[in-house]
Each structure stands twice: as C-alpha cells, then as structure tokens.
Image 1 (tube, rainbow, N blue to C red):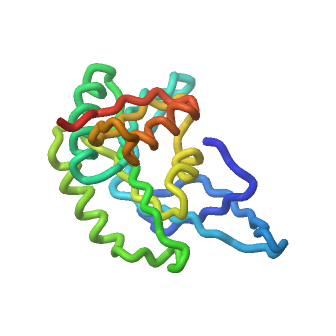
Image 2 (image 1 turned 120 degrees about the vertical axis):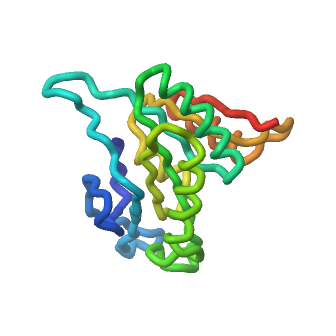
Length: 184
C-alpha cells in the first residue's frame, strides 16, 4: 500500500481494521488541517497468507462504478477468480462532497451497505466488500490498492470516454492490470 504524506485517514467502523497512518496536511494558506479518510467495511477479508513464508494469495479487485456496471464486473471477475483460485474484493470508494463532513455522507452508509450486499449476492463466490468514504475516488484507490493489482471495472463503452473508462485508464497508468467489463 502506497502512503502519501498529505493523506490522513482513520477507521470509521470497527468491523474491519486496516493499518492507518495519522498525519496532518497543510492547505494553500499554510494552515494545518486533518482530513479524515473513513473506512467502512462489510464482512471480513480472508487472510492473504495461507502459511508462514508462503506467497500471498492472488486477489481480483472489482471497483464500483455504478450498479449495473458493477454487477457486470462482478460476474466477469467471478469467472476470473475461479480460474485463478483468487479472492474476490469489491472496493466502493464513495465520494463525499466537501460541503459535508467526511464522516457524514449524503447517503447513509447502511443504505450503501444494503446495495452492495444485493450486488454481491448475485454471484456464487464470497466477496469481501469495503465502502470507503473519501473526497477523491482516484486518489483513494491509489492509496488502497496494492501495486500491479488485477482490477475489473464495468461500464458502458462509448466513443467518448465515460467516467468508468477514465477510471480504468487512470488505474492502467498507475501500473495496475485492468479488465473492462463492457455492458452491451
């Protein structure tokens, strides 16, 4: 996991724990501010090491774009995870507007959790799903994902770049292996 000196994030829910760093950032006027990067998770992530000294298990990461695109990506990732004997992880970076406190998104986290449970219930594999409250989706994913991750993103493909296509391009530029699950 890459860490940026400007970032500060804290655990918002005791359901899932992750190493967190606590640093302050400085804004344009030179004032120090604490930006909270919140984490809320559904379920638990299976341990990545099967035995001491063994290689970590492969993980297929699905990034939430929209409901229909994410279901398509989950179905695509399910077959891929079965073939590779990998874990399936769903990341939901939810952008909270700057007008609101980061810990109080405009949509209740419980509602988001219900939507994610419904989507994850449409496939047969176990899905480790996490909802992250953040200010910038791309920056959050840069921090959360391991280098060279296998990522599946779903969405419609158009001749002009959609937000899902832009996100896939960004993740490819960051060095991740991205599969775009195209909706027809």
